[in-house]
Image (tube, helix red, strand yellow):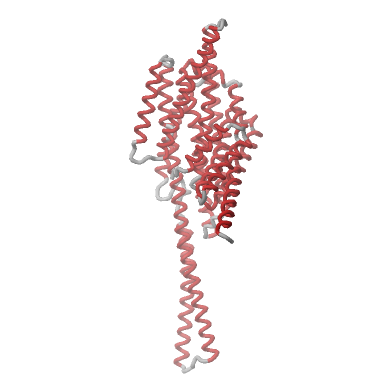
Length: 508
């Protein structure tokens, strides 16, 4: 076959496979569009909108935007971290159980499936629980209660981080992260027993040969042939024992490597959980504090907020060791600031519309104008909070799916897409029990699974040897998301872009 024909076949093959894999990942993302939009519609048309509107008068539009933004991003980050941490602990537990039962770490697909299911279940349940808590706090105590909840949760996360750091020492974390020394010793004892038994047999045979020579029995003909055959058999047995010994050593090294990596994942994500929300919480506390004391509508609050955001970003980004939580904390802080700006801008737009209506001859009271401002600001804060939390969850999911082993990326894409559909089906079935807040939080699990699928598809796109495979995979992602969701090219393109950015980051 000519080289040009071979290259053409390679291009077509990479393009077809890449497009199919990208389309599967994109379909997972597109499947989340309708349920997420439905959840947001229920919030803005239900009982939650009134306390949010009251929050505009209490903490001001800037305070409302930062509070809702920090709450939405903290919830998304916590749900994603819970999924990754539980998946890592599940994998560690299964490795240890397999070594105890079989003496060998058969790292087959069962462990990957179990870890994936544990991640999906924990992310969904954590998001649902946080959603129910947030809904209850807003309905009972108003938006201001979110400020105290963020502060308490920040302290609690720091306490969890300290506990994990103290217990996760020398491969030990609550009795799970232990090096399986007993299984290794048992394997070593078996090999040593086989080797000792073989040495004993060889010694006995040598003694028998010496006695035979002493009694002047000559080893000739068939006796010599039997002796050489037996000696070759013993040599093969020694080689087999040596092979088993090498496999045992490689297995032990592999075991330690996997445990070390999984332990590092747990430590990194617990650190991420503890510190990533601090910049957002500080931003929300400062702006909400100004609003509570009656300065929420003053322009200097915006200047203070901007200076605070820039100074914290400068301090974090100037760090000698830029950790993953620092990067995501800065991104979340700027997203919170953007939500606050959009909330203020929506209120100002309502004022401009009211002024134009008054110039046109319509009579509007000050109460009506204020009500329209609160309405527009509240709707914008909720919509922006939904948008950034969705982007955050997709990005964090992509950061999990991107760095995975290239050999399993296709399975991860399909498995995560199936998990997305399964989570959406379960959430829709239990929507009456979960309520609006529970459904909204539980959908974070579906968004996280879709992000994992997108991240794996992004990794596939980058790893192709030709540009055709990369373009085809990206086109498949966009086509799948648009075909199964809504034909919103800007929104879908932003999500794919976020997936690309986070999939290229290795948080470990």
